Length: 319
Image 1 (cartoon, one colour):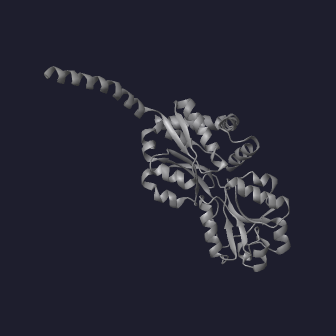
Image 2 (cartoon, rainbow, N blue to C red):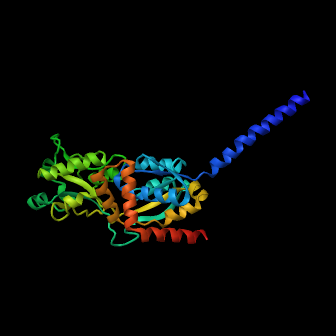
Image 3 (cartoon, rainbow, N blue to C red):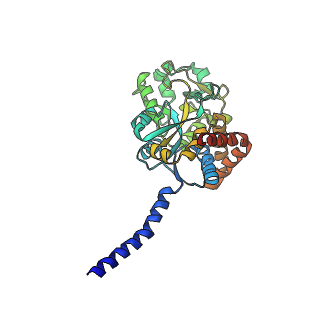
């Protein structure tokens, strides 16, 4: 009996010796999961740090194809490590909800970093519609004639071509319709970015009246410049709170366990022009992983001094 017990203990020790090193290795593994918000404007700010973390620090990286609220919830739950494209003030309620388990990692791009790095959100109409009908403000829309003018689907209700229902801008658009007294005479049409852009661009090309939500940065304005093709409506209630700033956040546990990688993420700064450029490249070339990595590498090559500075500053923080 005693010999059997000793044998069993030896077997247990052997098993543990095989398992525990693997567990320790797994815990020490350099791994990161990036969240996304179902927008092509997310991707440069993911693929650039992905390349840096893989090649400079030996990380393996995953990209979780989620929505904005899905990424926030997953990051708060520890299932996503980084969210590098959080629009504020749009997402402030999600940040508050997940504040205990997330950490702010600084500005990614936008006005808080550089006053001239303008990221706007607004309602728009074609320039010719503004000129012909005298529509210059969101408040002007409270008019039965205009509601009929913007009735895209012929159901007797004016249409605002809005955004993805999972994006915070969809809720803000609905609130604006109510605040301007347009509820009942107008409704927001929701849809994925590609679908909404196709509908907006189709109306503009066909010279049809259309009321739509839009934002910058976006390659849309290359073909449809503000002041030439598009008119931005005044927003006297200031529903968008001025220019947007885009922030970076991380899961607090991941941040604590990965200080070197976190230092690099903290240093990253882009511009709205860079994001707009990347979106135009994606539109033209596709969004498969190889193409997205190629676009990121092209940006890095053109901005090598900036990337080097990020790495130098991150190293200083580590010292």
